[in-house]
Length: 286
Image 1 (cartoon, rainbow, N blue to C red):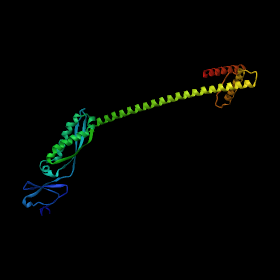
Image 2 (cartoon, helix red, strand yellow):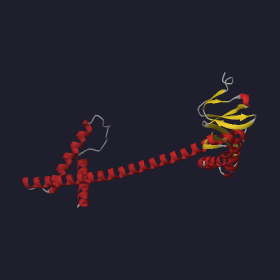
Image 3 (cartoon, rainbow, N blue to C red):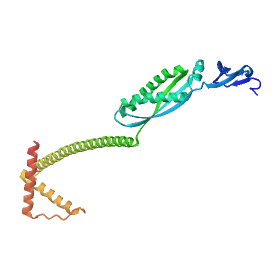
Image 4 (tube, helix red, strand yellow):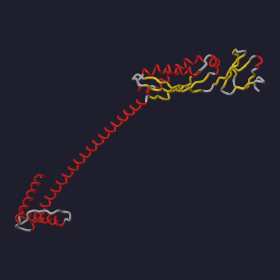
């Protein structure tokens, strides 16, 4: 019906190319326009001004001979004031863009090793964008943005990279575990040394207290009982402690059988040994 009344509707974000007798006549903006076919006018085609995206997958080889698939995403659009160039100068813009992307990626990636490709993907995207902008601006296209959205090495290479990464992490974990065990052993040794030191101080103080107590007992007994010597008092105290010890051994439910020589002479020998040991300890403390 629109052609019958020579009226056409152009949608938003779209422009139309009008020709007259096969020759370019005008660019029609969105809205309603009169295209009288009786005068030889017709719509040659429509040009979209919307932002478009083209994903290009390119296979290439890195400097260290690793094949990778690089996926570039190109966002582009036609400039409204250059719709004539976009319509008449370029028949297939997507194929043209794809060719330029292939050219730049295959000229850039082979100069880089695989790890550098991942690190410099923004630089690769910038190089693609600059080359496309320089080439496509002559055809009325604006390159809005170019992104490298994926870098996919060969499956065997990815598996090897994962194994290397896993081994490195395992080695780091082993080193950290060994360092932790080393610290634990050092702290345990320091704790044992401190414990032994404190235990030695305790034993020394205990022996000193025993010697001081015996000294006070000897002095007090000698004063209260005239005629006794310090040796007599010490022998009596040691024999008393000896019998107390025997009593505790016999009363303990967890003690095993203990066989020791026992008799009047034995008690004298035990007293002599204990006295000599305590006196020796007293001399060492002094």
